[in-house]
Length: 153
Image 1 (cartoon, rainbow, N blue to C red):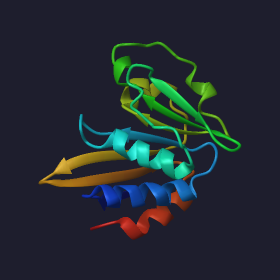
Image 2: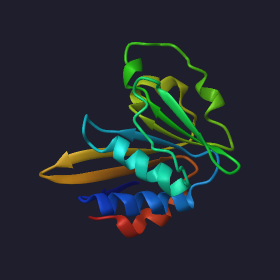
Image 3: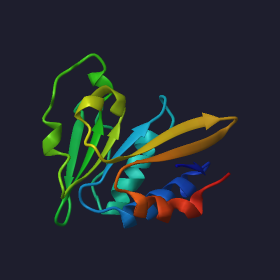
């Protein structure tokens, strides 16, 4: 089942990120799909801040991975855009573990390295509206349930 959520303002996106951050636990991997300018990095910034990251979260396009240690786990923010034509394994399995939380922009470019269970968010801008489509790829029923309040038909 795909959840469809409309988030047109930064305030709505921030609230959505806060609810997600409240509910996630160690081992959560979230992928973010969407075109350039869809809002992937903005969502990642809100999500990281809601987890407790106090440093400025910037796009890791040139670094690919930025890690932010928190209390008892690490938040990993990945931007895999530069890996489009690469088959290099950057040791992703060390980031996808039972303790840490990872968010991945442009996950299509590392699809073969993704864990079996992850939450997929696709952001689309349609008719002037920003729509978030959320798919559960195993193990995140509790999170899907928590996000039901945001859904639209």
